[in-house]
Image 1 (cartoon, rainbow, N blue to C red):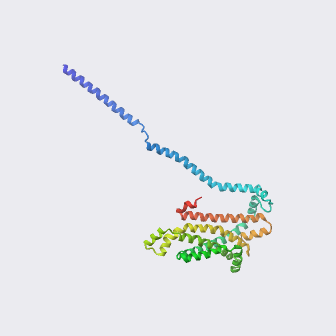
Image 2: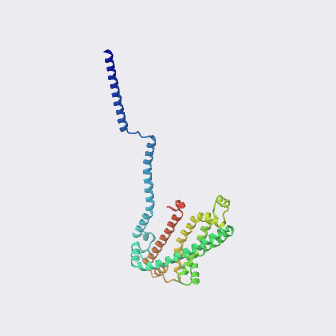
Image 3: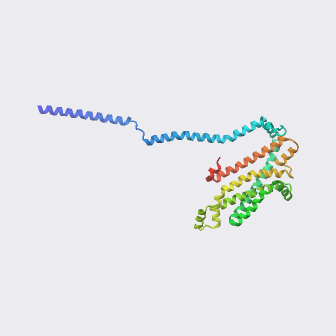
Amino acid sequence: MMNERVMVSRKGEEGATAAVSSTASIGESIADSVRVPSPSSTDIDGHQGQAAQRPLGSSVRKRSIGLRLLPWLAGALFLTLWQLRLFHQLFSLESYQLPVPSAIAASIRENAEMLFRYAMYSGTEMLGGFLLGSLLGALAAAGASFFPTSGRAAVAVMSALNAVPIVALAPIMNNWFGDGIWSRIAVVAVITMAAMAVSLFKGLTSIQPQYSDLMGGLAASRMQFFLKLRWPHALPSLFAGLKINMSTSIIGAIVGEFFIASQGLGYLLSDQIRLANMPLAWSCIVIAAVLGIVLYEAVVLAEKRLTPWNRANTDP
């Protein structure tokens, strides 16, 4: 009897222990399911780094936008001061000597058709001379790069063409090619050829010695050396020459039209200055400037597309 009571009491204790252990395991599983994982030091550092990068990136973005807007704001301020006749007071000028922007804009609006037609004529002279002069200069530089010693002397002689004044060159070209459009194209071609030859020749010949040794070790031919190494290396110099030529081509076309010409922005500009019609004369200057800026930006855009490795030097 006594043994039965002891066995019953032991079974009761074992059942209670099993119940307590099962309850504890259920509690632990619930705690595991609702436990919030503690962030590690790596996670904390990552979040802090992202939080630090956000204000830095936003500040850089704002600074970039500010730099892009700065030229426009400066231009707007310049036009405002001009419209308020501040420059007239500073330089003692009359309105007929320096028309205000509103008068120039009114003249452009009234003579839009004629200005557009003359701008297309001058633009044809610009582009024709720009392409012809740049092509001749590039061919001269490429040929000189195969013979660096004698080619350097030839390029130096060609650069002497830049010393010839456009005012002296334009009558000669008019005498050679007549009073048509080809005389102005020839003027632009002559003044742009030398700049391209000098700039591109420098890019073609300034190759680092280890690159030349590598191409020599690979038994590359002279043409392979030019196409695989010299030409890609000289592309930034090529576009530098193109940008210089685009800036000077408008000058050559306008000045060339001052002499024997019957249309074009330069012809209209000189004619209206003689007639003291300064608003229309300044309209020609504004249209020529806009035309030059648009073509220059087209060259810059082409440079960014064709020389992405040189993006750091082309971006403002």
